Image 1: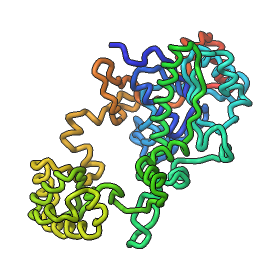
Image 2: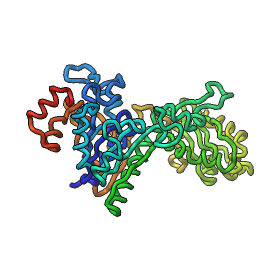
Image 3: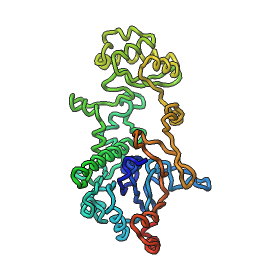
Length: 408
């Protein structure tokens, strides 16, 4: 069966998360992704551990960190030092027959190697060149570096995440995964596919300028809209929701649960099921607007009642009544969920060290589903294959490049 993007070739000049996440998204859907890495150190995240995948001798391999493994499957790795003239020539030759380049260097940094979008698109006018940077290709901050954590701060997310300043433990908190990087990777994949479609119409490629900062501000969604409409600056509210009540975590007799009540009818059912029907009939709480305005009166009443039973008992009751609710799972509980097993969320990939675990793509196409045919590659695992098969270099030429430390 042919994959959805099997006609596309991607050259990945990216490292860490946002760029590799975009490339992996395309690779899962069938694109041929060639990951260009430095011959000595490879992608930065290869060293971001422990934990590391165990090598055949039973030790953790420093080049195969769990972090690296999460975002590099279905790719081929070629190790080229493109700071050398011979190395940059090899990359340019690869790009001449490629459809897409993904890079995440600072603006202008690749120009000295002749690998900037203007130079590469002169050789290949159909090329789609995606640049992912902290702040974009324009503006006063364009040359600033920036990792996800910093962008969560400057982009406003951490002003919303965490307990209020006046509460014990209050203060800004980053999200537990690099959500800005991940979203930038997904926006990049969307933009790339839009550019592919535009190329069908025009016959020409284009440059995609994607920034983590723009992504984070866009992701503020309803909170940004709340501010723009009202002028009121949103504050940290812990697990509460600024626009919907009750929509938060509650303590139970043995832990916590989440209630996400999105309609007035659901709220009335909730009150009946917890044995507090009078709350559902109280005029202050009859509508979501009323519940938001009277949050301080309602939440303590619900909290007092919910503390009286165990989490599992409440969840069983709420599921039967069609009230949106959930446990707060630890990582082992996530993968033990029957739903995770039914959806084959965990996958195993054949790897030179045995197997590498991974998490399946959520993109479930009916006719051209994602395929998982390559584990995240070892550094330079496919160098000889690509030089021989794609660039048609002789064995002697490849040996000479290795001897000069241009490739690995």
